[in-house]
Image 1 (spheres, helix red, strand yellow):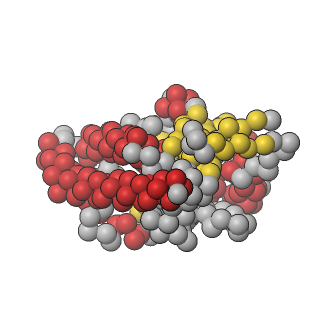
Image 2: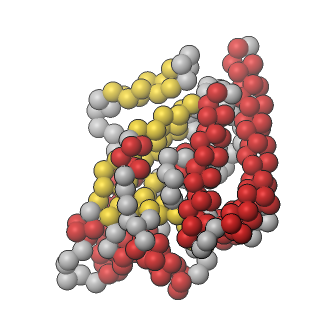
Length: 272
């Protein structure tokens, strides 16, 4: 009985949060972003202003999801992440709100955005004002990424290209590795776990698990550009090698570890 009541409440809380998210997106698209466009001195200032607004909006959204009981989350190493400059941030992608959780910690964060979002009338204005990079033009993609990184920006990329399918072997696209190799950029690794799985590609938002999901965003080590540059190997070969390295970093195999999930507290503990 208690589980049914808890699930029912979390369905309502999740619906409320995503409705709030939609209203916020409309406000950003039709009010805030146009004001930023007309008041900023140049495109770079406008993009940074919009990205700071997105960060604050995402903080509010994440806290709303937490305090309404829809989810719980912990972000480990956020202070380290905020110090990164001219860096690729690569993360696994188990849920719908991975980008939201990461971007909530970054006042400046460029992002590769799939073409579908650029066609969405409610989101196009936001991603355009924020200066996000569409991934629908491979010939122009590298130049855009290189330009942003040369400005000292951080660029968030999900190498899988789409959300992970639970139970299936994860497969990385080579785009992120190619960007890193060709621009000679350091890579910051972020690993996200969701226990139990929630907001996956296969399930609707209202298909909530029996217990409150816990999101752990863990900022891990950095792969220096010097580790995949300087050899005589061709760029495609270096990109393939880096991709294999990224697969082990983004999807580590637990060794002698145990996970404890507390249904009472709504969080996961990890012990080694």
